[in-house]
Length: 488
Ligand SMILES: *[C@@H]1O[C@H](CO)[C@@H](O)[C@H](O)[C@H]1NC(C)=O
Ligand SMILES: *[C@@H]1O[C@H](CO)[C@@H](O)[C@H](O)[C@H]1NC(C)=O
Ligand SMILES: *[C@@H]1O[C@H](CO)[C@@H](O)[C@H](O)[C@H]1NC(C)=O
Ligand SMILES: *[C@@H]1O[C@H](CO)[C@@H](O)[C@H](O)[C@H]1NC(C)=O
Ligand SMILES: *[C@@H]1O[C@H](CO)[C@@H](O)[C@H](O)[C@H]1NC(C)=O
Ligand SMILES: *[C@@H]1O[C@H](CO)[C@@H](O)[C@H](O)[C@H]1NC(C)=O
Ligand SMILES: *[C@@H]1O[C@H](CO)[C@@H](O)[C@H](O)[C@H]1NC(C)=O
Ligand SMILES: *[C@@H]1O[C@H](CO)[C@@H](O)[C@H](O)[C@H]1NC(C)=O
Ligand SMILES: *[C@@H]1O[C@H](CO)[C@@H](O)[C@H](O)[C@H]1NC(C)=O
Ligand SMILES: *[C@@H]1O[C@H](CO)[C@@H](O)[C@H](O)[C@H]1NC(C)=O
Image 1 (cartoon, helix red, strand yellow):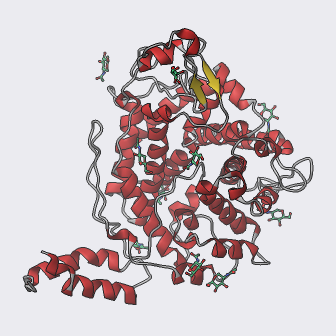
Image 2 (cartoon, protein in one colour):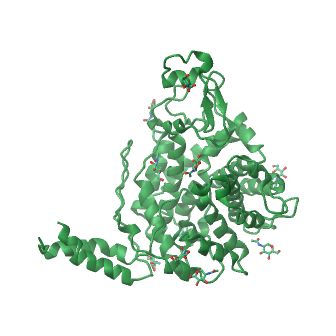
């Protein structure tokens, strides 16, 4: 029973584990709403020493997201009403069919329900059939895959790597490939169904907010002269973005989103300004973000820090954090597009005298349980980290809040760019909570849901972190040598 494994097995397992052993802990993947990590900061790769956990998390998230790709609007099982497989489509999340009036005596097929039953709005109640059409989720995952693969490419310190190859391949499939490209419009985004539906709504513009993450990733590859991001690919992608920008600036639903005074208006600017950076129209990115802070922002935060337009929603904790993430993204975009802007996005004030910081200070006092929103508690952490990194933390309240949360923020992806996180002891806090459990799973690369395949990824980030080997890692080694080997 206690058979001794051949020495080569233990050795093999040990060697397989070695890359992991020298690394920090990783956080489970979280899909943050919107952000724009400063491409110049990431490209410079001059990171503080305490970021091993964040770096390992980013590599793990790049690997995980890669395993779901590639993505394309042409992979969905239902065509948009245009009949064109290249058209993006998503269904309005809070709309529910009422088939009483249309002869729902026996049974209607799903297609009959979508076309003939009137749909009614129930704010905050997501119709689960929304996920039948996965274009929106695909784009969320695509944008995270591009952001984290681009940063992972920088962490490789190499002009070419599997990570930058993933980015090139994913962009090619979603936007450019002749079979799988998306038409540059959102004519069927968050489409209402039923006899009065079948066209996209202004709320659907939010579906592609991931462009802020995509812009950050592509700008990082450009800045590092990554050889997998070729001039040809760049030119084709810019051409696609220019057509989509035209649509965003002229389509009635896009204009309606741009004119919104709540999160839709905030994040419209995040998306369009990011696209303007992608097509190298920096002055307009500056104009758009300044226009936001001089415009709708002025009425978005009360003197007490609450966001009235979001507080009135059915999921107020989520919506406040969501809009705050958009404000923070717009401030990051302005800071990148015009580092000398005075005031910076962080220093603009609303009519009541509040800055972005006030919105986060208020949110820290809100209990998500009061509105049954404990499942979105994590949404606040990157907002707190961003604010602490920009405004400082002289009283230690942000550090204390994050410490108390039990959230391993020092191992989170956002910790890489929300720097320096003032408060001094965060390094100790993050390090103290490192565990050696998460990064044992090798990356599965290459997609299974459609062509073309992407290049396979390595078993872990090739990078060796500065944390070195800890006692828990040694336990791991001995467990492998004397324990796991016996399972064979
Ligand atoms: C169809 O009718 C049944 C029975 O009255 C009802 O339970 C169901 O909710 C109806 N379906 C829709 C989509 O209205
Ligand atoms: C997106 O990623 C999530 C993990 O966060 C995964 O569960 C889901 O299947 C992915 N969906 C698509 C369409 O890639
Ligand atoms: C990155 O690679 C260059 C040479 O290609 C080397 O000089 C430099 O030290 C490396 N940087 C790091 C952080 O490893
Ligand atoms: C792309 O597809 C269209 C029709 O679907 C075809 O006419 C065209 O030749 C194709 N172009 C390339 C480069 O394959
Ligand atoms: C990228 O290439 C440009 C133009 O050749 C050069 O000026 C720049 O220093 C390069 N940047 C890096 C990070 O290699
Ligand atoms: C943006 O540009 C428009 C005209 O091109 C101008 O009227 C407006 O003042 C500019 N806004 C800002 C914030 O610079
Ligand atoms: C905000 O304004 C103050 C005072 O002018 C300045 O010291 C600070 O650097 C500004 N902060 C940001 C993030 O722009
Ligand atoms: C949180 O729960 C609400 C319903 O209680 C649901 O609509 C929402 O999708 C959930 N969010 C997440 C991120 O799980
Ligand atoms: C956070 O927790 C660490 C470790 O327990 C502690 O050393 C540090 O003082 C705490 N920081 C703050 C700002 O509370
Ligand atoms: C670290 O662990 C301690 C004790 O388990 C916990 O109280 C604290 O909240 C954790 N901090 C972080 C940042 O995870």
